[in-house]
Amino acid sequence: MDEAQRKNALLPQYSLHHLVKERYPRFVDALSDLDDALTLTYLFASLPAHSNVNSSVINKAKNLAAAWGSYCATTSCITKSFISVKGVYLEAKIQGTAIRWIVPHAFTQHLPNDVDFRVMRTFLEFYETMLNFVLFKLYNDIGVRYPFPAKELGGEVVGNTSAVLAKTLRALMKGLDSSKGAVSQVVTESLQEQQQITDEGRKAKRSKRDKDLIKSVDVALSKLKHEESEEEEDENSDDDDAEDDDVDVSAPLRAALDQVAEDEARGTVLGSVAEVDDETVKRRRLFEGLVFFFSREIPRGYLELVCLSYGAKVGWEAEDSPISMKDSSITHHVVDRPKLPNNYDSLPKSREYIQPQWILDSANFMFLLPIAKYGVGVSLPPHLSPWVDNEEEGYKPAYAEEIEKLKNGESVDDREMEEASSDVPEMEDDEDEQGVEDEEQEEEASEDADSDEEEEELVTKPIKKTKSKKDRQKQEEEEAHALAKTMMSRKAAHLYGRMQYGIAGKQAKIDALHKRRAEIESSKTKENGKTVLKQKVERLKKERSTLETQYDASGGTMKKSKKRKST
Image (tube, rainbow, N blue to C red; front, side):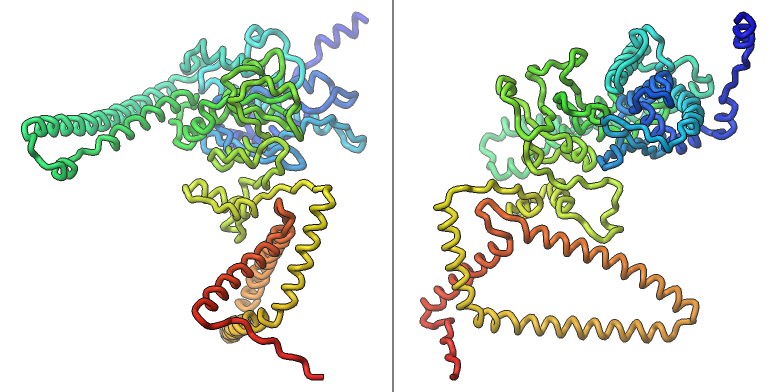
């Protein structure tokens, strides 16, 4: 036994630090290769303890995931998010490098038997060393010591991923308060000199910009005082002349106030040595002043990161929550239930109840969307991916068009709002109402049968003309393409054929999407139980009857006598 302990004490210890330094000579290289490392780390953090996976490995993965999420939430670098079947996709932009990873859903994970976890642990061991290097550099850039001391974490960090994240966030905020945003002493002297130079240039730009704003405001105020003195001297002057000489003080004052708000938001963002860009400031100001409270069924891991990254405050149903459930400062209560419980009636009425998708959609579009479509128990609008380029794909979803109109300040028609996302109506069980609806449908069917001949004469003629024009244009284009193809070489013709094949396949996908969209819109039912096509037919009939009434009042008639069939 003593011999075994002696040999175990002499067991050599190995390190992977030299491998990380050799593989990633620059810090940007390590950032660009973090996708797989973060995905595997978050995967191990969500696994249960098993014979193949030790609990110590899972705790290390949880600590690394919490440290990474805390940095992203504090520096407002999360730019995109999307919920899919595999998990939640998140993307952060750090020092100009886009980093994308997947957070698994908060479900019980079953470990398959056909997976070799020894190979995965080998990769995790290397990724752990790599992440420690990256986090050490990132945390030192914002003036915080990493790894966190045990006193700041409150002892050993155990529990689920959300609890570990909350403790890590508190430790990070304590470190920021103690350092007061100063750069850590670990940073080299050359880096400090570079930061000092950039700070001096930044201060010079700010002072010059502030002087220009103050000068513009002073000029406007001096002109205003000069006008007031002239008005006192010339009491008999006309009002029209005074209106022509009015000075617009609102523009410089508005610019000064916007600049003050931007400087405050820029000061709350804890950036690295490089200057904080405007996009980060916009993200920080999106949810500024909003307070979100998560119900107990909400997976608050990734939602908390997104909310904090965009400038909001977060609370949840637990003892360690910084915000109470009955706090009157809560603006949005996130609920994922078909209806609100009865005990929610005693809560303050100043809050809005929303579903979690509203947070991600608003963050992706950088716009606070209307809450009516994300209420409790409401059929949600489509969750669009932020990584799809609609212009490149050639198809833009209806909901994306609607949001673009809202961002541009255009009014969205009620009919378009209903077509974009309509709720399924409740079925009525009253037999009398059903009988009335059946009678109305029979009358409408008889009216349609009587006016078939008139509609055919009015509709078929213009359709034939447009169809012939389209066919003629299509035939001319085909002839031009065939003529141009005969003038090509064999190699160029083959390349042209492959290009046309790809374009045709892409157009077929776009046509299929448009067809599917039309089928969905035509199958949607409204509150009165009528489809979109049925409502369109009724609207056209009303317009036709109005025209007939006006024409009859003028002395003519639009009705044609029906021809009797010869026997």
